[in-house]
Length: 598
Image (cartoon, rainbow, N blue to C red):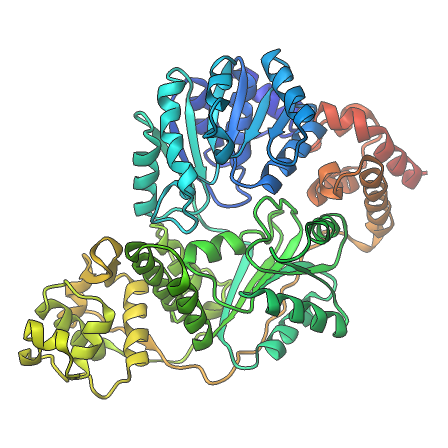
């Protein structure tokens, strides 16, 4: 490992050790190699490009899709003494000129730019005259049409390799299936890249999913365990966001709405309050969340289905970034599926994209209905195998009722085999249920031995079976072949009866909510010091106009509380305190500790 990188880690960011694959990723970038980095939300992706950008000569160029994301990172870096800039539509003409001047004069360490601005005439010409140390493409899944947040502007980023042939490029994302990864590599034209895939597991998050019965009552029961916590409640529509926020306030919670239809000033005010205050519940559409690096979000609740497992994983990843126990809770129902389908049909997307989105929604529904460890199934979706049950999800803690499903599955698999693995779910269900359709007659499928053998199950029941087989890994839905259901390497063992498959039964009542206890690690004897340190942090945050976590995370405050440093040099031994923060905040916290020890 480059000694400069280690020094920067300690002196700038205040950490003694790299996490997971960070060291290898940083080494590759410093050596000038392209890379693809998959790391879960909160796993430390930013350091992977920030440190090599500071080690290599020139300024690091970071392509970031959201204004909130780049502004938050720039503010955090400036608190650490890093010369960071962003260039986006929030700046005035004069401010943009000042940013360009500092960049031209070599006074910039990192600059964040949106892909839309990068594709504007003149931007690449200007950057080509600057010395660029590294190019980081954040949220790289946006370049893939199979990803959950495809953005056409990302496609133009493939030209960066030709514009900056000697500059290493790093594509980073927290959510990418194997198919999405292949498209990232292809569309960004990375050159012999090193590929780093960290575990997608967030063991501190407890996953719970239930059928939607009385959604408000279910949410209220869940939130009773989070009365003093900060969290996010996601809804599908703007109207539901506003009505849910009003209702939660009537129930005694402090709740704020957030969606794209609110005035800009109100959205900005609500987001600021969420970052700066404790015990707030943000009720939001997916317009809220990306770029929010608040570490102590204790829960993320979904009152409606997201569009895909990738979206769900990304949204729930906003909980528990500090590593403390947190909850991801969701209810789902048929109305969600109908609403999602209507939204998709009204969109301007082409038919291939719509089929892909339908397939992703089916995968999410299948995951909702799993009978085995929910975390293991989530990780398998991203191509990761878990050695055993996690013990920290609803299906582990309260196993669902199941029934033997091998024979049912064999009927379906036989039908798929006899139709050549070329058809999607709807047609296969029609064959199984013995329906007389033009498509069945066209292909002669009414003459198959599997025609009508599944008439005892409804269409929705067969859909559930298909989704569960996909989640179990016995089937794949091929989006590139119009959603055709195909066998996998494990299918034949089930078809031959070597597997005793258990399928989930319909759940008629909501499982009892379980309380998630958050470890505070604060004993009664330290409570006074803990509160004094928190008060000091809040006062400094208000003084500098930044969120409290940008002063110090809770984990840093706890270490101060436990070690009770008396001198400035002792503060440098605490994780999260580098030289810049020591100079800015150190004396104030030492006063608190000394006052407590008197």
